[in-house]
Structure formats: C-alpha cells, structure tokens
Length: 529
Image (cartoon, rainbow, N blue to C red; front, side):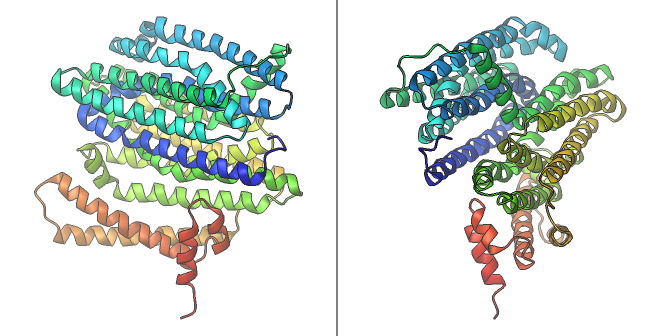
C-alpha cells in the first residue's frame, strides 16, 4: 500500500469491502434454498455440477487477480509504469479468458461425459461466456483497490450478486411454471444469471472508472514476463483458500454421481443423492461468514502492527485464531444439533441428515484455514500455505475415489473433512513455528468445551420437551417451530457461557467486527451485583 494512504482511510475502506463481501456471501448461500425448493434435488444436482467450473475462474480473476493488480499498482508511483502494468495484465487476462472460454465451450461435451451426464453440456457452454468479462472486471477492481478507493468495488460486488440472484430466482420461476421446463433448463437459467450478474458488475465499474477518469493514459514499455509471473503466483496464492472449496466441489462433480451410478444406483436416484449432498454447501457458506469477516478485517490490522514493531501483531493473530475457532465450533456444532429440523425446514425432506451433519463439520477447519492463509499472506509466506492447500485437495480426491465405492455418499463428506482438518493442523503448526508463539492456552480450550457441552445439553433437553408438547400435522411447520426455538436457545446458551467465562476479553470483542454488543453484554454479565 502506498504511503500516501493513511491506515485510518485504508481500514475504513477495508471495513466497507468486508461488509460488501459478507452481503455477497450471504446472498450466495441463501438463494440456493428457494432455488432447490423450486427445482428439487435433481435440479439442484444439475446446477451444482456446473457451478464450480464457472466459479473457479471467476474467483481466481475477480478476486485473486484484482488483489495482485492492486498490489503491483500500489507499489509504484510512476503513472506511466502503472499504465504499463495495467495493459500487460489486461492482455494476459484476455488470453487466459479466451483459453478458459474455449475449454468450457468447445470442451463441454467431453467434460460432461467425464461427469457421466451429457445433458450438462449446454450449461457449460452458457457458463463459458462469464470468462469473457473477467479481464475488465479484475483490472478495474484492482485499479480502485490500489488507490484505496473501495466504494466502487464494494458496490459492484453487491450489485452483481443481487442481479445474479434476481435473474436466477425469477428466471427459474418462469421456466418451471410458465413453460413447464426441465431441471436442465432451470439450471441453464441459473448459469445465465451468473453471466448477467458479472456483466452488470463490469458495467457499473466502467461507469465509476469513467467518472474517475482512470481509463486512459500514456504507458511505459516494461518487461512483460516478470509482471505476468508475479501476478499469476500472487493471485493464485491469495485466492487459494477460496479456490480450495471450489476444487473440492469440482472433485465431487466428477466423482460422486458417476461412482454411485457405476456402483449400481439408478441414475435418477444418484442425481438426487448428489443434490441432497449439495445441500450442505449453503449451510457451510453461512457458517464461515464470520470467519471470512475476520480474514478480511483483522488481517490488514495484523500487517499494520507487524510493520510498526517486532511481535506487535502476535496478540492479534492469537485473537484471530481464538475468535475463528470459537465461532467455527459454535456454527458447526449448532448446525449438527438442529440438522434434522433445519434439513426439513429449508429443503422439505430430512434425507441424508447424518451425511449433512458430517458435511457441516468442515466449518471448523475452514474457519482456521481462511484466517491463517490470510495472515501468512500478510507475511509474504505463500509457498507453504499453497502446498498445504494442494495437499488437502489431493487428500480429497484420493478420499473420494477410495471411500465412495466403499461406504457411499458419506465417503465424500468424510474425505472433505479429513483433507480440511489435516490442512488446518498443518497451517497451525507452521504459523506457530514461524512466529514461535502459542495460539491459545489450555484454559481457552477447556472453557470452549464447557460452552459447547452446555449448548448440547440445553438443546437436547429442549428437544425432549418439544417432543412432548408440540404436535403439529405438517412436518415442515414442526421443523420451523423446533428450529427457531432450538437456534435461539442454543445461541443464547453458548454466547452467555462464553461471555461469563470470558473466553475473549471485552477489549478483544471491541476489535472484532461487529463485536461491540458482545463486549457490552460480557461487561454487564460479569459486573458485581
């Protein structure tokens, strides 16, 4: 970051970008519920099979490349060199986008055959067009971020996601009702929604660029290869944790349906089984929203403190870890306890509840992975975290291949958890060795265990009571009643025990995004009466 920008203005922009990112993540998770309700498990399978193909390139370019571009531009003061960097990266991204477009569009039949379902080819061809907007989107986002002007980027993120969700849901309603379309037609509309959403983001950023007069300028002639090499490596590293989830989904797209069908399961049943399994994705996305806010908001503070004095950032790293683990455990354990009711409430049936319970367990390691990869990036440590994430991917791939034929769909969830927990443990060990520090003391883990056990006991007692007093005819109404009561009781119990035992100090709560109210509650709860 250039010295002309104060930390205060940067943190203000970072907070705005954090809020926008959280809104986008919530929208990305929430729209899947009504979409699944409209198209069913088979329709959900159709969309989720294609989704990771499209999102991999989108996340890498609009996320990773945008950050890499902003770093390169912020590191130089010369305007002509800035223009040279921008031009070089844009040309490079254009080549990449054409290559990815060709792979998805012209290779759609081959890719769909590898997934075992040729009817997915039209969806891949539609999704291919999203890659053509990525060069402009990444360069414009990176340009604004390099100047610490975060508002256009934040507004564009929310705008493109809102347009995307609106097109997906409205388009699906029209196709499934007015035209009595197939689930493949609905899936194609969902993919088209992503294309239209990205186009909307490009248009909005272009308007901001034009107003800011950042579109044109003389450029210096600079060596292209060093720029291309740096932007590629850095973009992959900074987006690797997000790419990991999509890579896991890509493995599932290629293995679950085809392996279940090869094992003798009827094709429609195999599709529905994969669709039910994919219900876990929006739940996990919501579960890691808080961890995402830590990685986006606290990490710049860690980087800032580390530059001021040696080891000044260590307390913030420890806080990041403890807060991420705290909320990761709360979200994961809470979902596991209420899954029988949430499954019916959100998705109409209670199918594969045990599998989904195992699936959402990955919220815990993901919370650690998201924050620690970001912290290590702040130190310029990119190679080892990337190696750990690649290792997790290989474990997931091998796990699916070995476990699905042996134990069925639950093997895919188990493979994900094994890979992610191993990766989280490796990152924790590496960071502890690198900074020679202790992430948390034994007291923290004991208190976390007490809060977790208390939540389990309260929810189990509440379930026993509800089973005696609540008798509704509709299974979904019963699930709504149970879910609301259990979530409120569980959250209140966990938060109260955490506050009473002071797992985090009041001062630490004030540092955490949106933690002010928790700090006030903790102070009130522990005051002498």
